Image (cartoon, rainbow, N blue to C red; front, side, top):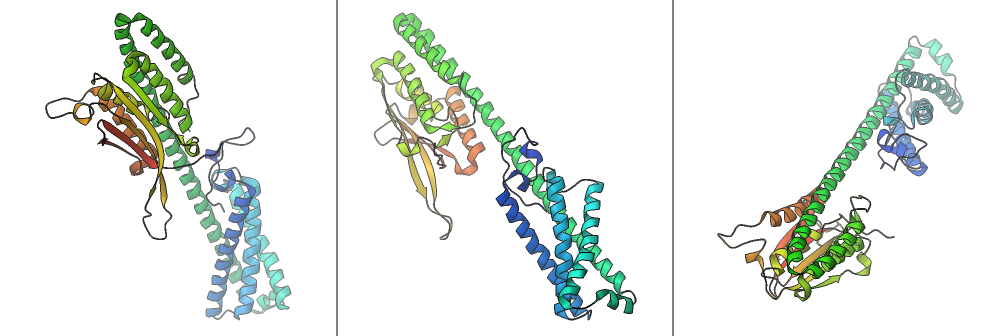
Length: 392
C-alpha cells in the first residue's frame, strides 16, 4: 500500500532507485508514516461498512463497528506485512502474479477468522451460533469480507502503481533535463574555445610574446575546466573562478584596455548554478562592448539576492539569485541590440540564446535573462532565478 517518496541514489545492495516504489526508496520513518496513513484509511472504510450494515438493519451499531474493525484491520495487517516483506523493492510495492492473489486470499481468510474471534471476545457472544440460526448469514459475511478486502487491496495496489509511475516519469524528465543541459554546455565550451583561438591567431602576428602568454593561460584554463567532472551544477564560487581565469586570459590580449571586478558574497559561494552560465555574457560584453571601444573599459560581475513578493498573503516570499554582468562598453545600440540596419552577429545570438535556454530548462518561466542599458553607459545583463542555498 505505497505512498510517494523521493528516490535515493542506487546502492550496490538493491535495484536502482528508479525501479522502486517511492516509499521503498526512502527510510524507515517515511515507511512508518505510510503504514499509519493506510491504517487510518482502512479504519475509515470499516466504519463505513459498519454504518451501512446498521442502516440496513443487520444489527446494532456497536457490534457492527467492532466486527468490521476487527476483521478489516486484521486483514489489512496481514496484507500490509506481506507486501512490505515480499515486494518492498518492487515497483508499486505489491507482489506480482500469484503471490499477490495468494496474499489477498491469506489476508481475507485470516481477517475473517481472527477478526470474528476478536469480535466475539469483545461482545461476549457467539457469532457461529447466530450464523447457524440464521440461514445465509455466514455466506453474507464471507461475501462482504471478501469484496471489501479485494476492493481495499485493489485501491492500494492502483495507488501504489500510480505513485511508482509518477516517480519514474519525474526521474525520466529529470534525466532528460540533465542531458539537455549537458548538451548545451558541450556546445558552449567549443564556442568559447574557437573565439579564443581566433583572437590568439590575430595576436600571434601582432605580438608573439603576448601570444605565448595567452597560449599558456589558455592551456591552464582548459586543464582546469575541460578535465573537471561533468556535473549539471557546480558552486557559484567555481563559476566565478572560471570567470577569473577567462578574464585573465582576455587581459593578455587586451592589456590595460580591460579591467574587471568580481563581487561574490560569502553567503552565496555554495549556491548551485549550471557551469558556464555567466561566461557567454562576459564574452559578449568583451566582444561587443569593450573591444569596439578604443579605450576598452571595465566589466563587473556581481551576485546578490533579491526577494520576490508572495503570490498570496499567506505564501512565503521567494528569494531569487541575481547575477549581473555590467560593462562600460559601447552600449546596446552597437552590440547585442544593434540599431536599425545593423545585423547582429551569430555569436551574440548563440551565447544569449544558450543562456536563456538553459535557464528555461532548469527553472521554466522563473528563470530570466534581461539586457538593459547601464545608467553609466554600456550594457547590463541580468540573470535571475530562484535561490537554492547549499551548505558545504
